Length: 418
Image (cartoon, rainbow, N blue to C red; front, side):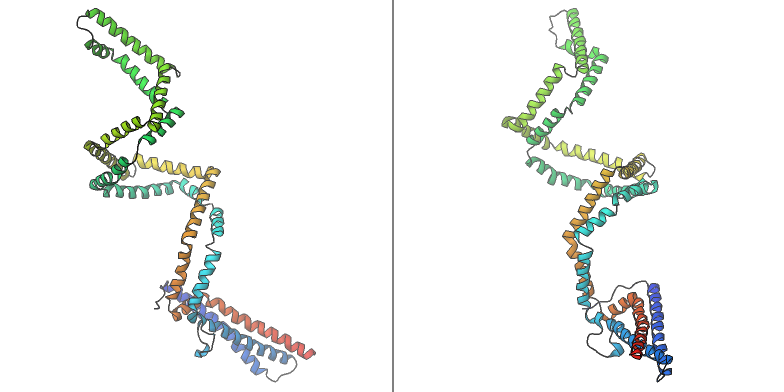
């Protein structure tokens, strides 16, 4: 079943049609001129004989090339001559040939990789993102899409995702090996030292400013028969020692308490990985936490608060979130421009992605050519192709007329010499 081609711009097609008619008129006029000269010089000798021979050869060349050009698109003079009207009759073969040509010369993995890497896509993107207007446009578009997504998300959908997908997966996945490995990495890298410093500093500050509260708590645990003055002296002494102990921990990175904590965490990490009893207790704790109804409600409340805050921040074109995002996008663009190693990595990733797409979907892409041409109407396809290349093909007729005349002149001259 044939179908019509997609219509192009009528004004462009009209201009192509006029250009084709002009070139046809030029080529036809040269043929008529050669015929007139041939008739006027027929039977002449001498110099006019040379002119007559050239005119005769020009007519032969012009008519032969007219036949060749016309035979591509239609039957010359409407006669069903074999091997003419090639485009309408052989459009399927044309489609297959075009598919093979594109696949071998444009969608080859090596060629695609070379062209993507040579295009310096990352550098161009970096220079584009460095400009304030472009960075702002990226942020505006991304903010609009994210704002729309946050608006469309419903609590029921989030609850269903958590209850039906996330929680069952968390219950089924053992947490002990993951937690143990993570804790071992933290202890080995000393990443927890910052948290320890924060706890010690805050504990020291609280003891310094809340001595009365500290002594009151200890006094409640004192024996009833102990003298009040003795209890007061002991609690104040304990308060001073606690402050001094925290100061020692704060100021000494190799304090025994710090080392003891490191050892405790390392042992816990090892037990989480290797000790079945510890693993069982960790899994039980995980199940109890995941089984709490308040966990989902608290998570949804936290999500809603974050969603509303982010949505409102994104809705403000001059808000702090968008301004910060624009600065970060520009900074990333500048990094792409200045960091050659980063650009090289991104270019390689882009080339790998392009090659992957070509390897996986290249045959489907080229098949579109054959499938589309197979559905074309033959006569209309010939007319469309002729509008695009017919003007250039008329130069073949013109060249045939000129070259034919020169060859005829040369042959006549050789004949006269012989």
